[in-house]
Structure formats: structure tokens, C-alpha cells
Image 1 (cartoon, rainbow, N blue to C red):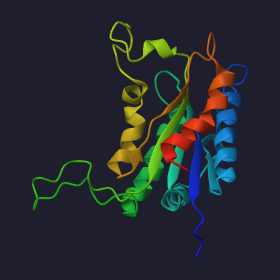
Image 2: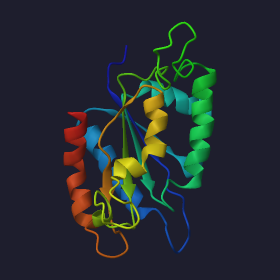
Image 3: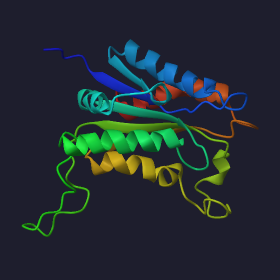
Image 4: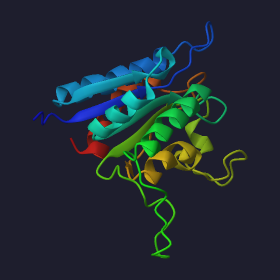
Length: 201
């Protein structure tokens, strides 16, 4: 039996020629890949834009102990291809009962909460995102747009899919203000330390 730990890296950058071509998200993805290979993991990869088989993606999720979504934030969410990916992959995981068994509630036990039917316990999920938004726009009630919300708050529509299925959500990693005053080189350099801390590897 193969006892090698596995990590699944999902890159959902959507290429817009001459505007957003994915080099930064690919750089973060490659940093994560190098980090996990160095730690002795087997790395499973999916680049959503290149196509995928939903049933095979379910199996990758089942095999992996760690799942990382690499995404740009386009209009305050992941690119639309990721929503399509989630709908297809998680529907497959629902129909096969490999991701979850219902939503957790039962008629027999009224105390069972919505969102407790997952089967992905023991797995960890993380988002690594690139933003035009500056870091200062988060966690500050005086900011007009996010009104004190954190990046985790803004990313909840992504992380909830995994929490619903039983996975643990670990602290996200972000590269801010990428078109103006961000520290892209520093964020890339510090990424492996974040991975080491949140995954304890």
C-alpha cells in the first residue's frame, strides 16, 4: 500500500490575453509544488482551464490529505470556470456519496446541524489568492467596501463547499495590490513558511 502523503493543487486562473495571463498564479502554484515535493509528498495537479473529468477530480480529492486552491480574485470571487468546476465535481461527490452523505440533518435527531454530513474529515483546504485589493482594505471597519470583513469572510463562498463536506479550513494566503503597490516578490518568498505553519509539515 502506498503510504506517501498527497496534496492536490487546483489552479483556476482563467487566461485573458494581453491582460491577465496567469503567470503570477502559476508562480504561486509552482512554489507550493516545490515545497510539497521537498517534504516528500506526491503532488496531484489540476489546471481547471485545461479541462478535467469530474469523477477523476473526486478521486483526487479522496486521495489527497491537503487541497489548495490557487486563484485570482476576479470581481470578488474566483473565475467563473471554478464555479463550474465546483458544481460538477461536488455533484459527482454527492451522487457517489464520496464527499458527503446528505446535509447532516436527520428526522431522527433534531440536534444534527445543516452542514454536518461530510465525509472529508481529516483533510485540510486552503485558498491562495491574488488580489487587486490592498491589504489595508480588510479587517478595518472604516474601509468603505469590506466594512471590517477579513479575507476569510470574503472567501466564504469558496471555503464553505469544503467545510460542508467535512474538511478543515486553514488560514488563507494572499498576494495583495498586485497592479500597484504590492510586494509580489516578498509574498512569493514567504509562501513556503505559511504552508509549513498551517499544514505543520
